[in-house]
Image 1 (cartoon, helix red, strand yellow):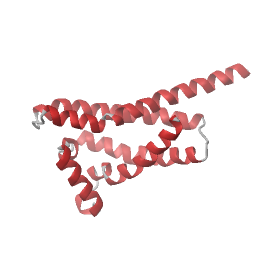
Image 2: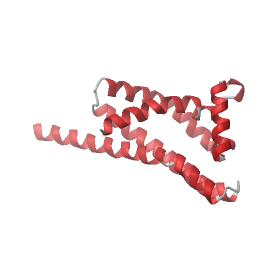
Image 3: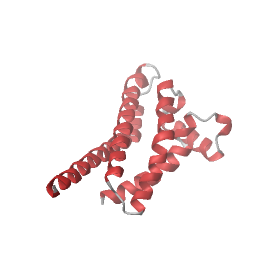
Image 4: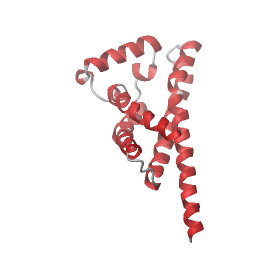
Length: 162
């Protein structure tokens, strides 16, 4: 059940990364019409300060997402389709899970502090943004823990055979 959920998480995350997240580092003149509409809708509905006022550190996180995580999403989807969840898959899962959960935690702290103090977000707007970004903290944490546990299990099996 978890594997099915993760398969769809990775699959869905591919267009999110390409259409929404990458827009932070891609110049506006190269945005597709779809990207522009999605961004305008999201920002107008949620007052997302991360996308409205992207800081250098946030752009760096997005660059890492595009260069490291996006190829991993394709790798993970392929591994799930082939039912080849091996030690290498779980190692990459741990790396992805740590990176994604850490960067999202930084974003949530920024939203909580600078969102209120610097950008004047209301408590409701902060909670709304937390609701949007919290799955990108919790799901990668689950991926991290699951990957770590699977590596330990496989290591224990190797030790039992020896």
